[in-house]
Amino acid sequence: MTKIGMRVKKTIKLFAISEVAIFSLWLYSYAFFLNFQIAFLASVLILLGSTYSYKRLVDSRVEAEDRPDDTDLIEKIDDPFDLYSEEIISELNVEEDMDLKSVVKEEKARLKSQKNTLKNTAKSAPALVSIFRVVPYLFLVLGFIGLKNNALLSLPPFLVGLGFGIVVGFFMGRSLFVKEVIES
Picture 1: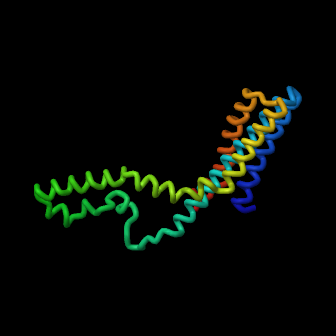
Picture 2: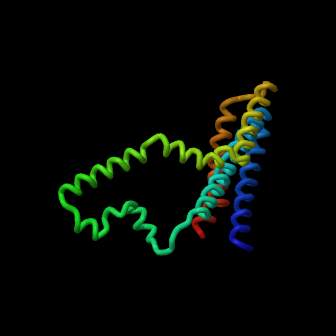
């Protein structure tokens, strides 16, 4: 069996064990079970959808990025403006040192500007409004409204179900999507 198949099998096992535990709540109270189940499913689906949509966003950005083979990526991250190259350091004097400080201040101000925030938000917008995120949120809202309209809503089991779903969804998303990136 492939690594992906084993991860999917592990994820399904985790979900099945969680569902068996949740179905045992039915013995306690039907309303408790229903609140817990709707909240659990919504939070698991939200986490899986978010993880998947961001994974797709990162994958598309990695594929779109053109990196020349001759540049050292770590050096580019550590010194993006080539400020510490040997040629520049040997030619520096006191006046140029002051200019260097002003360049660094200008770059810091540029990085903090509102344009970059809007630009980054626009780049990540496809992941924010992905169908994989919108549908689970709709399920959460409609489930909440359905429970409220049928006088079955009880907030303590609903909130506990959300928390339990977050934990299970985290481990499911991690085993499905994150380990794939680490193994690559």
